[in-house]
Amino acid sequence: MGSLVSFLLVIIALSLQTNGQPLVPAMFVFGDSVVDAGNNNHLYTLIKANFPPYGRDFVNHKPTGRFCDGKLASDFTAENLGFTSYPPAYLSKEANGKNLLIGANFGSAGSGYYEYTAKLYNAISLNQQLKYYKEYQNKVVRIAAANKANFTSIISDAIYLVGAGSSDFLQNYYIDPLLYKAYTPNQFSDILMHSYATFIQHLYALGARRIGVTTLPPLGCLPAAITIFGSHSNKCVDKLNKNAISFNNKLNATSQSLQNGLSGLKLVVLDIYQPLHDLVTKPAENGFAEARRACCGTGLVETAILCNADSVGTCANASEYVFWDGFHPSEAANQILANDLLSSGLSLIS
Ligand SMILES: *[C@@H]1O[C@H](CO)[C@@H](O)[C@H](O)[C@H]1NC(C)=O
Ligand SMILES: *[C@@H]1O[C@H](CO)[C@@H](O)[C@H](O)[C@H]1NC(C)=O
Ligand SMILES: *[C@@H]1O[C@H](CO)[C@@H](O)[C@H](O)[C@H]1NC(C)=O
Image (cartoon, rainbow, N blue to C red; front, side):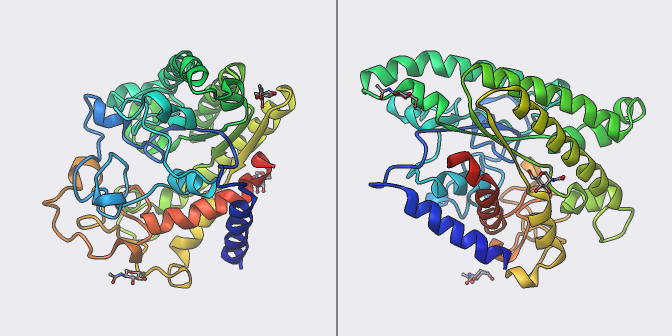
């Protein structure tokens, strides 16, 4: 039922596009590996995905740095909005000239709301992502003028997608005694909320008016999380899921108060928790054969450099798997998530 509704919404969104023009002039993306389209390729970091089998189902079977066999949910979102190409990764060589007129992707795997998460992995912190966005504006004001494009509209009518928080918990809080002994998950979430609010205020000050922020996924159902934190059970780790739900509730409340305080801002929380949880608990009903193990390698832990061309056991058909690697959904799952995002994000484009 839910997927039928999402499907219809995709059709509606596609039919709203006039003369093949996208519904919005541009799309900007900020966050962690959930949305990184290749920025980490240009960093000195271990958190990369620009080698096979990553990207094997992407356009031209090309690894791009996306943590997926194919497209990310943000790529499907760009398609659903009517774009025929994706906003380029800001550090890539494609990010120049006219290509920048449809926006840019500043996401960086291993980044997060907590400044130190990015430092730990030498990823691009959200503060640095904002600095890059400012730099983008300075460049594009000229590019727009040269191409008779409306710069104000590119900035204020664009969709801004923010997806972070997973790395803050999985790649930082849960594995760092200095953090988990100092703060309860609830207190840590409050710290993240504080930087989230600051981030949104800065983005607003820079001209953003339509912002969608994704929730945390069910952290305890990610294959590597079950292996590492599940004490030999094959079930979703309840404690991690509870922490994610509590974070998501705070995200809702914080977003509501931000929206109330910043005039003209549309800020929508895009839920990926429930749709991904549904895929994990009812894979067969959604066309998947496997939800515990990821496709890459043994499917129990591998991500980044551990998921590579020599990984033993990588599956033949990732579309049968909810997860591509230990922490990231497959393209097939991302497509379903993106359709759900569209239904909750429709108010941003209307
Ligand atoms: C540029 O876009 C802004 C925001 O949508 C709009 O208010 C303005 O009228 C546009 N300017 C021109 C010259 O079309
Ligand atoms: C957040 O708010 C939306 C409505 O804006 C609601 O549909 C959703 O259930 C809420 N999520 C949580 C985790 O409270
Ligand atoms: C891969 O799996 C999907 C989903 O089960 C199926 O629709 C598709 O036909 C499969 N592709 C191949 C090449 O077997």
